[in-house]
Length: 421
Image (cartoon, rainbow, N blue to C red; front, side, top):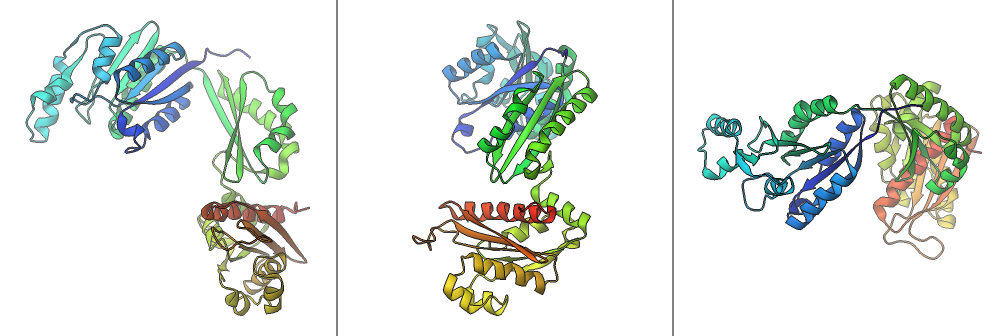
């Protein structure tokens, strides 16, 4: 399949405050998404401190591998803002006053009833090789360079200023200069299988992907996303090809697929419950209401969510949920026997089709040799059948709660689909 040449971009976020963690770099993330929309591939994002050596090295490295270099930060009028003078040095040119930029700075301060200081005037001095790009929301202008077939754009680090410059100036100019390919993404979302096991299941399918369709594994907490990225010219053709490839891989991993693109596990479960006209109720111990929170975060969940109990103490497992005292004494709260009774009794009490239960040792204390921290039992009860699963998780309390939530929701999903075998 023929396609337009891939256009590569690199993003440089400049400033010690980013390296120190005093400010989070949300700019680079936003820029990446905007470039992806127009078919520009970001090959690297770097954070560079306020050091001449670091910035000049970053310029040279970025030029060696990218067609477009986008920079944010370091454009203030003070001595620690190095981007402008170093760009002048890099492009071997002088810095001179730009009357249009001076008028914009003057107008900016006049509208706010503030005096234009000599330091502010410096904002209107720009490298002579750059094209002045007006910044209507601030005092630091954008600077656009074209050199050796490469495009450079320097923007202020203030997010709302940068976004306006990108949207109104940078994106349109990139579209004018470069013949851009079309990029199409589709994400397959899986749960209940680790990255390496998933990769082993689909390795032959992956090997046979055409060269213009790339696969990326994106693991997260309890999930693995498979992102297919297709490059070409016509979006319809790319969509059709990607769907065909998904159709080929789906039989291999169908049990683990719960959705696509931005769909969450709790949203997918909501769709399954509404489609089958079924309802669910929860009895949570170690997860402390976290699973209920996930389910009710979905708009319209009142159609299928009956409610929940959080009987954290054994006494309330007995008096509120009818878990037998003999079961608690003999097997303990963290046991298969207990979660079976929790799930079955919550289902009956709340008149639900599915009863979901969790009980475990979230940590960091409370474990012992037979039941260490991270031991969790979950159960899903339905008419005539209860499915249980034992989890051996981590030493981290919040991580254990979150992983329990994912595992419990997946058990519910499989129960709804009848795939628990």
